[in-house]
Amino acid sequence: MYSFASDEYIELIVKTYGNSMLRAAYALLGNRDDAEDAVQEAFIKLMEKKPDFKDDEHLKAWLLRVTINISKNMLKASWRKNKSVTQEISYTENESDEMLFCVMKLEENYRTVIHLYYYEGYSIKEIAEILKLPSATVGTRLNRGRAKLRKMLEGDVSI
Image 1 (cartoon, rainbow, N blue to C red):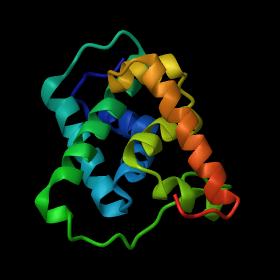
Image 2 (cartoon, rainbow, N blue to C red):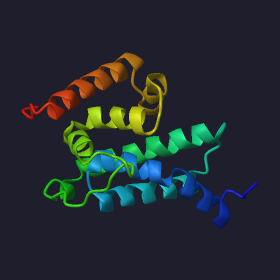
Image 3 (cartoon, helix red, strand yellow):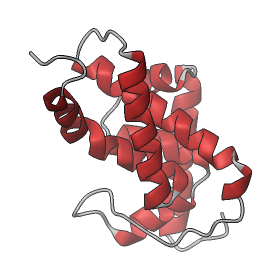
């Protein structure tokens, strides 16, 4: 077992959860540099707070929740409002560019639940716990997000 602040522990956490956190931040921010900043800040919070986790899944959920909160705070920042989004990263090597483009055009609340459900594999109940929302709200956002994606992919881009 690793010591909480050891280099080996930090490296293990970054390798294990870094990509998931980066994708979650990118889903909200739409910019790789900002997403990397959010992830870095989340890791700093982990090292500062040193929370106790029940298991690895609890650790992952905590890291995603913190990353999402940091990303939302970055979206509210006044300096970001005039920034243009120019960099793109894909979620997976097989990810369709069209699908990623459509997901990124969705409103933040739909992007977040779609990312957590399809890309991170969380259930509606788990997403509700991570986002601190009722399960019904998560289910509604997931259904509405899917409907908007379907319309975009069918060519009706007047969303």
